[in-house]
Length: 163
Image 1 (cartoon, one colour):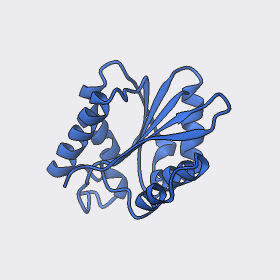
Image 2 (cartoon, helix red, strand yellow):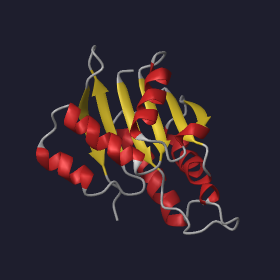
Image 3 (cartoon, rainbow, N blue to C red):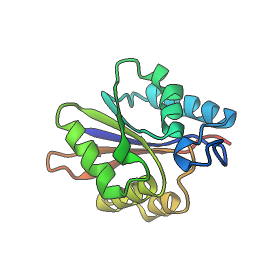
Image 4 (cartoon, rainbow, N blue to C red):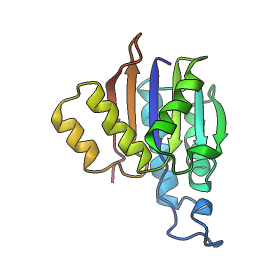
């Protein structure tokens, strides 16, 4: 894997009709912000070869909103990405990246935010950038990292949706 894109799901409904967090769907604002983030990433050339998407309804809805910007991407829905810890997210991305250049993970906080902060630190990012990521990783936010031959991350972009 040469590049990893971490994309948090768009804004979701507060409660699902089923009462189950897993079933929460995106609201209209979440769909719009996700669509816009997908277009922004694609315009910048950040296009995944493979997308690993949590099986939760809100992450599936997010992928549906962004996938038009990434028509060549393969998608894999992963049950274990639902509320996954940072190490699990990174492990799944690394495994998927063994066969491709760019992996996108569509997932949840706190795992994505924590992984973003961890990789910013590992890559020697400036303290102000680390602080920005620590202070919040809102819905439809994306973080992009490049990896060197030894697998060390370096910051390639941090994008927050316009509000």
